[in-house]
Length: 342
Image (cartoon, rainbow, N blue to C red; front, side, top):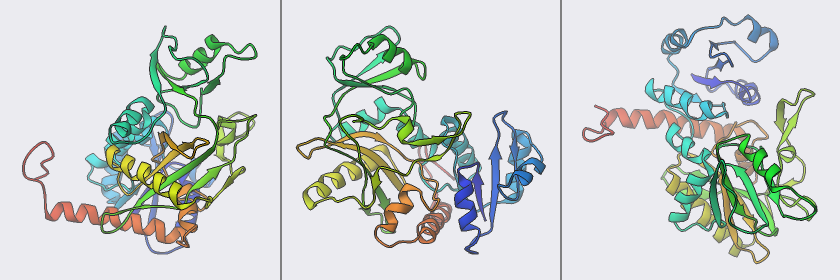
């Protein structure tokens, strides 16, 4: 039995429920902090599901006794606090734990960690309220803890562009802003690592995003489709190719970047990275993206499809691996130190 948390897990849930391998259940966390356990993601089911307090929800989950949790919350609490709750309940998670997710969501900290492991990153400086960039333009201003390019501005200093407005936009999302040297456009790709059963790391076929001189960086509109209220409803699909055309020299560089980053950040099961490739063919780490919905059109599933692995196989392999982790930990508990489990 697996437990899903909140859409966008709905597309994954709809597909995996037809496979018959596992029994699936949904745990939804609402904006007011209450929980519910609808039988499916239909409007009627969600409306009919009883709202529970946190303590009531924990008891319901204990009684449900799920073998594994597949997290689908990509807000900051969802990627950190709620994953930690399932760790505390000793319910294994597919993917990265709360600590790794917290590190990955902070762009300044994650880039410092991978840089220390020998991964190339653009020159950067961390700004706080009242600071102004010391580097000369062009540079990119990014809220440190934000996703989907929210609050991001490419500042060139030309055509009357206001630095004050760019800073105000970035600081409206976070109290810390990363000012990062703009890497001249060559190519931009997303690459991913998938852990194998023996612990080795495989670089999956890459996804390339097609940019232009007029739009040289990916903005929010390039990542999310919103409804009439401005609420994100799905991801964009245009202007991309998977598998990307990657020659062997570049593939080796991307493999070095991705596998070094995976290990340095303490990733588990899989990891994804946005990478800028300059006109000379040198890749730069932009950020870690450690979330996957496992929906049929999700990035990891699409990349695995590039080497003829089905969504069902990818999903069930990682679910079974999470279950096996718990079994092995129970058989061989750590007896000493801060990580003692017995």
